[in-house]
Amino acid sequence: MSLITFAYLIGGLVLLVVGAEALVRGAARLASRFGIPPLIIGLTVVAFGTSAPETAVSVQASLGGSGDIAVGNVIGSNIANILLILGLSALIAPLLVSRQLIRLDVPVMIGAGLLCYALAWNGSISRLDGAVLLAALVGYTVFLVIASQKEKAVAGVDEFATEFGPGDSDKPFAWVWQLLLILLGLGLLVGGSNLLIEGAVDLARALGLSELIIGLTVVAVGTSMPELATSVLAVIKGERDIAVGNVVGSCIFNLLLVLGAGAAVSAEGLSISPNAQSFDFPVMLAVFVACLPIFFSGYCIRRWEGLLFFAYYLAYTLYLVMFATGLGAIDLLRDAMFWFAFPLTAVTLLVIFLRAWQRQR
Image (cartoon, rainbow, N blue to C red; front, side, top):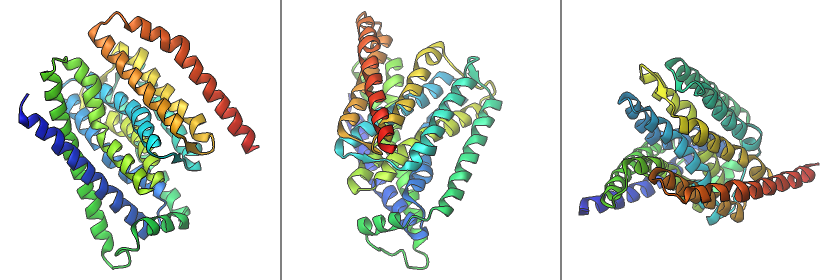
């Protein structure tokens, strides 16, 4: 294990923090200048930028004929986005959830997941399937831009003014600097993520972990680091719409853009392993659906709900490691999750949903 490995890890983390700061600040001021709701910025500009590492990894894997890596990267990153990133962000501070997320964006996220699952049912996502996913992404983005023009949120502008101050938004070409700040932040996020992944892979190999475990854990979490850095920093800054919108938007972009682009550049499309069809895709969809009652309960993700998300991510990662290494204890973990944790969580989510529905009435 060399000093270069630690330099990659530390350098990657530093670039992620600096990049997240530049991205959130630039996006916030740009939204303030043009009167765009912060949620729309989080769901488009920030989400697209923080999905860049997943896009790069999946396209490269697809061109190299490694469809399993491309698909596993998307599924693993989406699960990490919801369980790990929202979980940690909610532990820092309860997250306020916009009504638009409940009524539009979370259903779109679930619908995108179901669409990808349906396209992958025959064991592959073809070039034509990839074109369908990219077309769906274009339609979703155009709809968000049009909707943002109808929802000039004065509250969002005041929020940014309180957090960042008036700044130089009134200057004629201030938007150029803000756009450059966003691009700088995106570049630092991508570079920092790449450094962090390379350092983490070297560290995992030095510790004797297999390539499969590295792919299931390090690559998925590493490419989600921009979302983690951006969302956590947005929570600290008080930009909670950007924090939650970034995660939901990133999941949508991962499914439609990353899988779509990965399938489009491959002559044979993306192959889907039986394990992904029978386990990872259903887990991702279950995580998406679990967002609805939690988000709907007072339009807030509380700390205990964040803790639940985080605990489930640890259990999911433990299951992957046990499965990859063939440990006998995996049967015990699977039975405990299936017969105890999942039913208990389902009952809890049902109670949350019914209470929220009664309050709405």
